[in-house]
Image: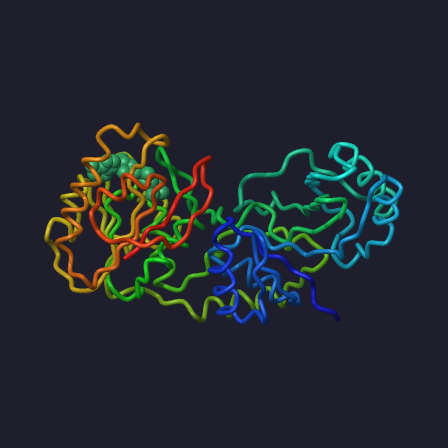
Length: 381
Ligand SMILES: C[S@@+](CC[C@H](N)C(=O)[O-])C[C@H]1O[C@@H](n2cnc3c(N)ncnc32)[C@H](O)[C@@H]1O
């Protein structure tokens, strides 16, 4: 059987990191492309990337592109698709259509054409009007078809993922400005942390960074709790999926010989954090404290460690509070961070260069990504 033409999408700015992650997962020749990474893979590779990637958002199975300047071209292109290996009759299908810079620009009309084409090709087809939101719900699985028309070229893909991969399933309770799990994952990787020494997040909120870090240290598959569209799709094979799950489980560690420290001045968010950590199965790995950042582990002088990492997403204005007062906060944080041993890794996520300059430590930019209507930068030492 020929391999699938796959595209693992990610937040723009994380492509190169995702390429490295897929290579480490044993995916042959992953190639960076805008907004993701292309690769050719068999069924098990598709299952593996969905289950084990911490950076990808979707794994798309792509059909060859075709040109369409008219609806006649479009329908001709549809008829040539070899759909049956990728789409299963009878399982609900969600359509996502996007058209830009093309003669065919009306996404609603494109969707109508595809619906009526599929209705004839797969007579038992059922369409979903709204995609489910709970990545843990086995009843909420669906097949998703994505149609993108860009410069008159039509790219049709079947999404093997469904609900985006950053929705791991353990974060049901969130604070004011929660981070996306894939972004936290990228920040931790960029920090250079060795996963064998303590890690601290003194602005932990609902805990995305420490929970994701505990998963990385225990080598847990990021998708271990959730369900994926492919489970209801034509490519599914129970035996191959169980083999991939077993492969992932074999690599995981039952516990850690060190702690990950998470604190926040807001006691109520720490309660959410605790519940999220329980769901993620990493509560044992965390040491939770209520307090301002200067009372946090390492920054208060206790405990002492020559090795470790401070990885955090301090408030950066607009999303939590306005920047007033934040300059002093970053300055005071800098004073504490300068007391850490020089071997300590530091990684901060912020949208405001002026604020991070206040830290007064030479930090270099690791990546820049769009997030919540802002462009946020990872700064590391
Ligand atoms: C941007 S949010 C962090 C979000 C977190 N990464 C998450 O995924 O939920 C910033 C957090 O810093 C906390 N915070 C603000 N000022 C603080 C201070 N002086 N000391 C400790 N925590 C503080 C807020 O309560 C908030 O939870």
